[in-house]
Image (cartoon, rainbow over all chains, first blue to last red; front, side, top):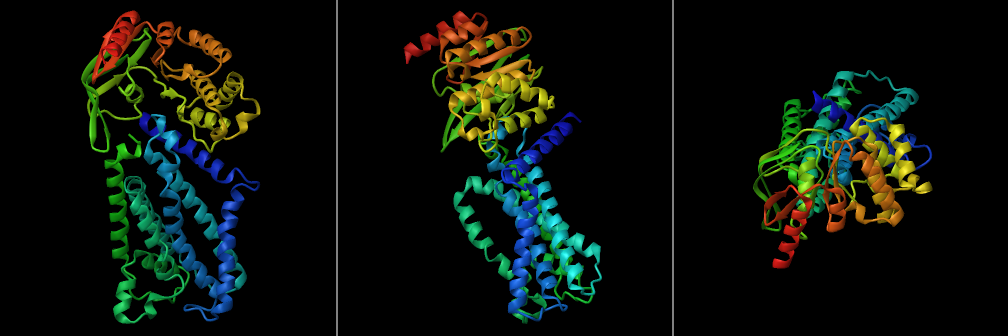
Length: 256
Length: 219
């Protein structure tokens, strides 16, 4: 019981600390954490709307693009922020009651909350202004978001350890992670890709996350190839691997 | 009370494995302040981190009765991007003490002036030491783990440290690492000499200092 309250206290303190150093230094504070990605998505949406007029799904390009981009962000923002969770709080780990996992939990909660708010703002704005007939199916959306977060958390926990141990891996990961945005089905639907290549695209769990997320906005979307069992398997296996590596590497993380 | 039971810890760097302590058993009782002596690189700071619980033993265990501080050194437990005040708030939160009261105490003690609101990364080592010392003295611990910190700072600061330390030491103890035998003599009742993976306890601090000096001459 004592352990749990300490962890809760530490996570709380870390949350405040992350907020203060990430957003506290500029006027406007946390508002920018929301406005920045929201503005980015809206701008990208406007640009792509001008380039490609007919979305692969529905009638609004904005909605098509934003649903893909935000589902992707639930993975990308979580890993991007959490990869450095332990490294960025290294000095604070010299307090014996701050554990490496606390830094992960704090950043995870903060990022999940932030991205969720961004999603509400952006998708709320689009749904309200574009006047498309949307029939939102929350279970599909929440399922996809939850799995994206679990998958991202697992990847980040593995990365926290491996980045410290093998600096070369960090380089490789950055290179591999970069084009992920292009091949994860943010701009296209995997359904429309010819047979041998489609199976290749479908190996990427993010493709399934985005398909699942879009199903929540487009009830008519059939999402051919969406395999929820595969997605659940990969997400939880990754999380398990992350927890395992993280626990076994406590010494490395504590910088002994 | 702090008790080591068959405690073993190795320091590993790039394939070199060096014992800090090997199969060491030792009890430090409440009511006595301990000076920790040993040559450069013997592992005194690692030992303090072990006592604090910031790192774990390879074998054996350490039993702790009482509230033990974090190792208080000028290398710093501070997050450089956070201001002095934010660092103090953080510590108040993780140890569950009154935030405003601690801030007031530390601000008064450390005398950083406007720098209290500046990132700790911009501090000089003397300023960091003042902040670290004030911060730990503002939280009530049964044991204070002090790593060389009294060595920094001007005479004014040293006087202040001494005064607050003396009041604290009436109901708390200190485990102190210092290369200055004068400092050890001043604060500690007994001593532990760390040499080649062995901890030797001396009930009288003078005996410990003598043993340490002998070790130094031998090498």
